[in-house]
Length: 189
Image (cartoon, rainbow, N blue to C red):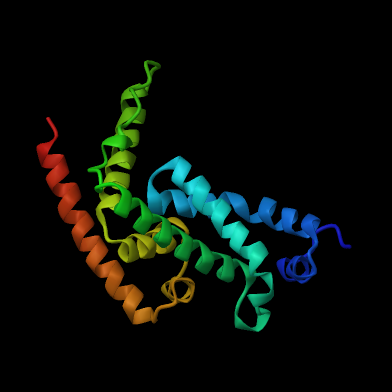
């Protein structure tokens, strides 16, 4: 085996039950999978669960992946989107949606420059809180296009939508985020 096999080569081995190849894929893609899930779900434990669930699906459905339909990364992204949406629906069914109280900003750093760091942390917390208020599809489009830097067509492929649908989701999401962030800034003492 080569020192740095492609995802496609690893998936061919995973289809044959090669656990070492699977471990290499997990090691390669887990940080990004976790980051996407965290942005969508807003909770570290939930993101860990979803990333693990996504890789479990990769293992159990390895034979479903077809290289001619797209890269492994795109296929994993689609699995991750579905796992995140499924998890979000399960969480909503179990409890009412919280207003983001769990996303409190960290205390300011007492070191010089702590006030500006606190301001950045507060702004990031405000954005995360507003992001969590978006409907799941809009939130996923924002995460893929703005945080993961996918093009609209790449996000559409991952989400299983047409490009125009993703563009519509982004327009509605940006409008709603602007409204919420503006209101939040006005309400802050």
